[in-house]
Length: 101
Image 1 (tube, rainbow, N blue to C red):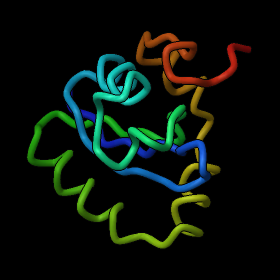
Image 2 (image 1 turned 45 degrees about the horizontal axis):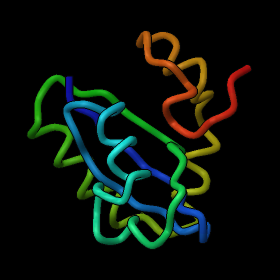
Image 3 (image 1 turned 90 degrees about the vertical axis):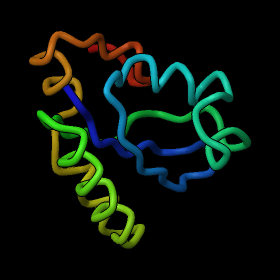
């Protein structure tokens, strides 16, 4: 699986990326190895995620999300029940900087 994701940084800015291993990528971001942008803005928390079959689909969606305004990214993040979505994919919410229910 491939994922396009949006993380909220400690300074309330957003970072958009894609990965084929969302758990590993979130750990990398929070260890300072994820991206130059997020390193000084830790901790980061997963705010939104979509799953795709192909790398190409995920990268196209990443490009589209990067064009959104901060407000649009806020609205996107508010539009999903992230803990429920992650649970439906058998991913542990705790790995993503979110509170466990």
